[in-house]
Length: 355
Image 1: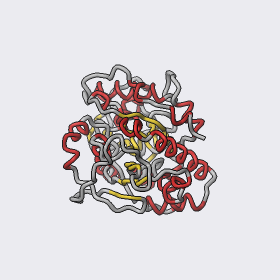
Image 2 (image 1 turned 90 degrees about the vertical axis):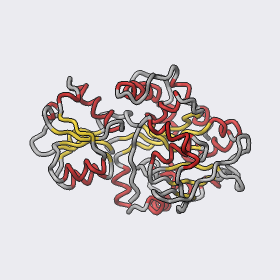
Image 3 (image 1 turned 90 degrees about the horizontal axis):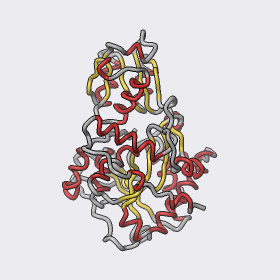
C-alpha cells in the first residue's frame, strides 16, 4: 500500500533551490514514479511556451498516495485522457514533499496538492494556479483516543500526539479552540504519523491525530474515534495546481485534463468496475481497502467545484480555507506574513469551461 506524509512545512520552499538535484526515480503503471534513495533524476519539463499534452510532449502530473488522488489512476489507465485528446504522464511520488519540490522547480507541470500547501509558495513568488478541487476529507482524518476519554474536554492533561506543521496539527488546534481550549491544556507531543500510530497502539500516548490508513489501523487495534473531519467538512481540501507557464502555453490541454477528471468522477460515482479496478491496480490496494478509504473523502464533481470556488465565509469555500490555513501557518511561525491576495491563485476558468 502506498503511503504519504502530508506536511505544510515552509521548509519545502527552501528545497526549491535544491530541486534540480533532488532524487526522483521512475517506474509506475501509469507513467513515472519516484522512490526514496533512487538516484534517477526527473528531467525538467519542456521549455516554457512549448505546448504540453501532446503524444510527443505529454503533460506531467505529480501524484502522491491519497484517497482522492488515486482516482487519477482510473482516468489514466481506462483511457479517458486520450479519449479527450490529451496525453498525460502520472509521475508518482511516494514522498509528498518531493512532489512539491518537483513542482516548484518546473520538473512537473501540475501537482496534486493540499490547499494549505498552496499558501507558502505564494510568498516565495512561485507562479501557479489552483484549477480544480479533487476531494475533501470527510472522515479520513481524525482524533483517536484510549478508553475513558469521551469528549474533547476529557483531553485536558492527556498526552496527545501529532506532527507540528501538518494538517492534523491544524485540525487539532481548531477542535481545541472550538471547545474553549488551547494546546497548553493538553500534554502535546510532536510526533510523526509513522511514530504516533504505533505509539498509540502500544498505549504510550492517550490520543493521536491520524489520517488513513493509520487511523483505521489504530481503531482496529482498540482505539476509539473521538472526532473526525466528518464534523469539519471543507477543512482539508485536496486540489490540482498547474504552473502558470503551462497554463499560458497549454490552456487547451489543461481544460481537457479537468474534463477528464469530471468524466472519471462520473465513472467512480457509478462504481464502474473497470475504473475502480484501474485505481486499485495503480494504488496497489484491494478493492475493499480502497472502498473503505473512499468513504473518508468527498470526491468533487463539477457542481461541487463550482460551489467551492465561490466566495464565502466558511470552510465550504476554498478562498476561506486558504485564508484560515494562512493564519494557522502564521501562528505556528511557518510563514512570516499572510499573502495579500490568496484568492488570486484560484482559477475556475477550467471548471466553468468543462463540458
